Image 1 (cartoon, rainbow, N blue to C red):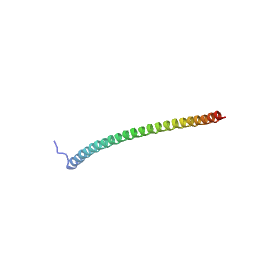
Image 2 (tube, helix red, strand yellow; image 1 turned 90 degrees about the horizontal axis):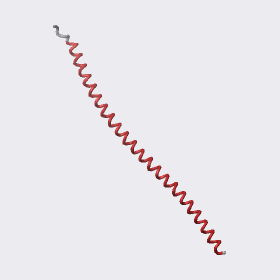
Image 3 (cartoon, one colour; image 1 turned 90 degrees about the vertical axis):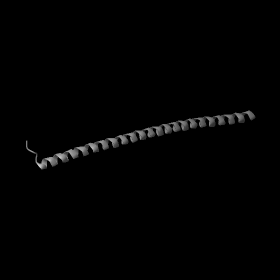
Image 4 (cartoon, rainbow, N blue to C red; image 1 turned 180 degrees about the horizontal axis):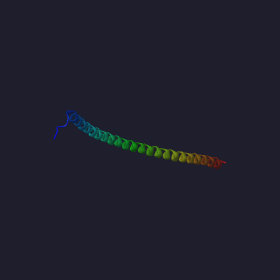
Length: 87
């Protein structure tokens, strides 16, 4: 059996090195992608929490507005009743 030409052996070695590098880059990419996905999930969770806090704050503010208006009406009624009771 003949020995393959030197250029073929060099090419074969370079191809093997390229495949090893490709695998290394693939693993590195997968690790980085995993980290980015984890960070994205964390950010989504933070955004959801902030949205919930904002929603709760708006509901609380709306409730306070309603209660304040009720209180104003109650004050007006009590003043009117007080005025009527003197005369």
